[in-house]
Amino acid sequence: MKTIIILNSLRKNGGNFLFCTIALISLLFILPRSADAQVSNRFGIQVYTGGPSLLKLAVGISSAYQDKVEYNGFPGVGGAISFKFNRWISLRADLYYKHSQLEMDINDNAFYNELNDKWGIVLNGIDPFGHYSLALPRYRGNIIADFHFLKDESQSDLYCSLGFGYNRMKPRLLIDNKPVSIINEVGTLSLPFAYRLSLGYTHYFGSTIGLYGEIGIGGPLVSVGMKVRF
Image 1: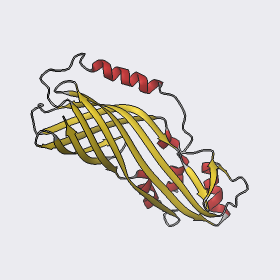
Image 2: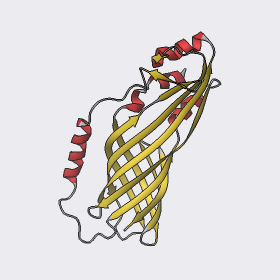
Image 3: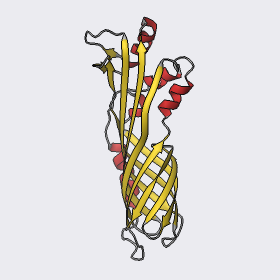
Image 4: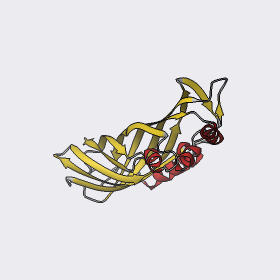
């Protein structure tokens, strides 16, 4: 049943960027008006991968449907560019992509009716029984402020982050490889508003290249990757 509850949280994207815009403007106001002339390596580029999938965990612990629903997907991937205003504050633009997919066979009315009540499936003359494949591609874009605790010349970087942005998930349902419409798509997972609150640590090997790890909410729970600063 927990799987069905998760699926019920999926619905159609909508809304506007008003709240995100206000939050971003607020972040920009707290940044210094001029960059610190003593800061070196102001620019940064990073790539990373993150997980785990909460949807996969939900499918795995569902006592009612874990034998009927199969999860397929891969860890999310992301990238960011950043600019350091002074020793303590930097700003980055972050993009993240995650693909998940649910596979199941529906051969009885009880299971189909339960899913139909949650999703609002529009069949358009297609037989409701068969192999269901629900693809869940997800995109997130955030503007993130990083607050650094260590001095700029250190080989290590310990920081916390706060960011806001946009989230997009567009589910695609196939029944026996035929596209089917969904009315009540993706719930809280597809709200247009995105956020990021995290704590991270980077160690640089030399002056430019480093490896980092980050834990947080709003996006991947755990992410690891590489940073290049210049």
